[in-house]
Length: 286
Image (tube, rainbow, N blue to C red; front, side):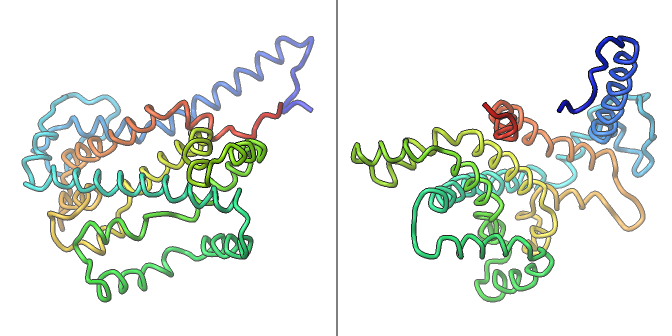
C-alpha cells in the first residue's frame, strides 16, 4: 500500500497535495538551518559592543573582528581546538576499531555466553549517564589520578555499547557463506575481519565515525569535570570563558562556535555518501 494516495486522474488535487508537502518540508528545513545561520551571522558582528548584539536576520555591518578577537582573547584558544581534535579523533578511531571487532565477534563467532554478554551490554544502555557520572569521576580522579589529562577525556569513551550494537546488527546481515569460503581458503579470524568484514562494513563504520566524532566534539559536561586548567579544556568548555557575571561576549563566542562547527561539517560531507547508504540499509528490499 502506498504511503499516500497518488490521486490518479485528479491533477489539481495532486498539485495542491504536493504544494502543501513542499511548504511543510521547506518550513522544517528553514527551522533546522536558522540556528546555524544565526550563529554565523552573529559571529560577523562587532565584538566591541559586548553583550549588545543586534538580533536581526540581515546584519547592517559585517566584520571579521570577532574571529580575531576570539584568538586574541585567550592564549589557549588554539589549544582548545587542538584538544578537542585530539580527543574526538582518538575516540572516533577507537570506537570504529573496537566496536567493529566486538560487532564481528557477537554476530559471527560462536562462543559460550555470547547471548548473555550481549544482553548485559544492552542492559547497560538503560542506565542513565547521570547515574554513572559520579562513580566514573571518582574512579578517574581519585583512584587513577588522571584529572586534567587526555586519558581522563578519552578513556571513558573508548568504545560505546551503541556502536557495538550498530556494528553487530549490520554485520549480522553479511552472508555466512562468504566467511565459510574464506575459512576453507585458510583465513583465520583476524584475516576474515580485516579482508572481508571491514571492506563490507564501510557504510556502518562511516555512520559510527560521524556520530561518535560529533558526540565527542560537542561534549561539555565531562571535560568540564575532569579539567581544571585552561590549557586542557576543549573548545566547548573554553567558550564559556566569554560569559561573565554581568554580560556575555556574544559575537566572539559565536565566532568560536562557528569555527568549532567546521570539523563536523567537513567530516560529514566527506563521508556523506557512506552515511546515507548506512542509514538506509534495510529500508529497501530486493
